[in-house]
Length: 314
Image (cartoon, rainbow, N blue to C red; front, side, top):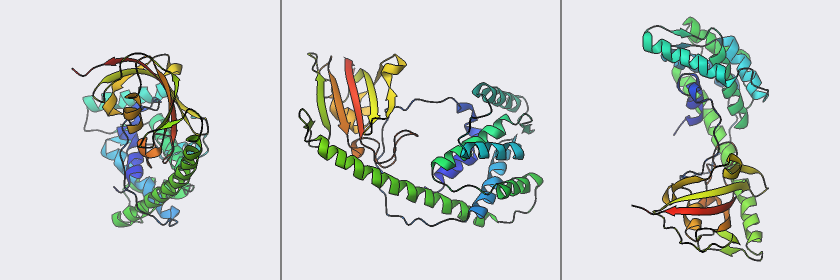
């Protein structure tokens, strides 16, 4: 699918600004994705920047949200610099609530972001996400030129087909960079698992899942169709922790057939009351796609899991 990243960001202000709260990394299903080799071609950042500005303003205007060009640019600059965000989440939520209230009362007229909160936050997320995805610095003058052309109703210097091509070129470059990064991480993860398999106490299943028993319980073992309650901690092979129910102070419950393959298989080995450590290859985890900002594509994962109880399928 073309332009998944780009289109998500272009519509950010109108469609997802209200979801500004940070979310914990979740243990969720991972889709298997077939990938093909890609050649990284350096895109034209001037054309892309202009197209981004034009489409960002136009798409938000379709939803009756009029953004501030200057605040968008300010947000992009801060996002790229990974600077501290200048607006609080409460301000973003309040401004979005005002936008939604306006649309309910008068859905025909525009809502102008006079305070610039939504504009800045949209720009910040664009800059932050583009930087994280390895997109070269935007040409801010061209972004502003594209925004102003859309705002003033001028004939854009790039037609629709040219804008689409410019955006697709960046999208393809991002995908190629992500694939190359995932392959490097996958290679390092494979080496780690090969060495880990030789350690005392580590068992390996036919699928490639590795585990050690930290504490062996005496209860029943769950089936794939059961719902289980667990405490867990997840880390990358370098020791970086990306999620922990212990830190949140509350265990979680979920259907065992609704999570990553490594969990579905591994927890069926555990009697209630057990704590196991799982070493999960990427193809039993989140694959080349990864999950959120903290789990890169191709990464092997380490989970300490404590099985608290089983709720059998009814």
